[in-house]
Image (cartoon, rainbow, N blue to C red; front, top):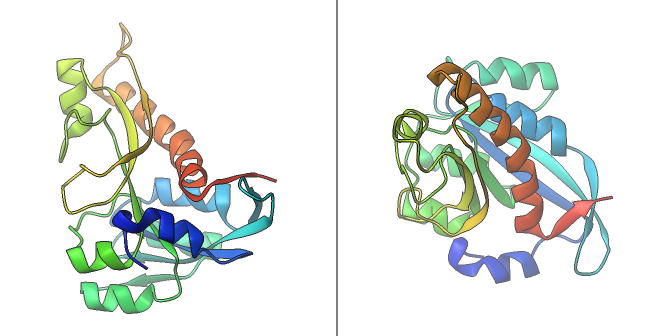
Length: 203
């Protein structure tokens, strides 16, 4: 089963009743925690045939041994590993059917992307402000403000959009307050985007 190029085949080969999700992070892990709280062990329906399905966050992984997200995983009771190489990462994720990037700060290889269908969240209204410092750039330019969830491809922040929503800069916004609103929108949008990508709805 391939990556984004084979999304249709990916959907056709999803397990009938239990989908294992892997989440990758490098830092604070707030998006990761939100995904776990919203999705882990929750019942859903397939839109195509109304069959029930459970999403299971099988593993979280980080390339940063000091990431605060590791503590979050411990409190939530979700397995978490620290990896030092992509080969080690792929071995750890062997049971997972789909991967979610939640502030993962390493570029994934074409091999990984082809092997694992992978989603990423980006804090701008793509294609505006790809790459680093997207929140600051959108705040200062007052264009491309928002959040996007997309399939991961070899092009940085350039994969097909799954779901995105725009934001406006409020008159009294500071960069700090705007950043908080972006993160709040991320927490709303990412779970919805995964369900859309998998063709699921809440039971």
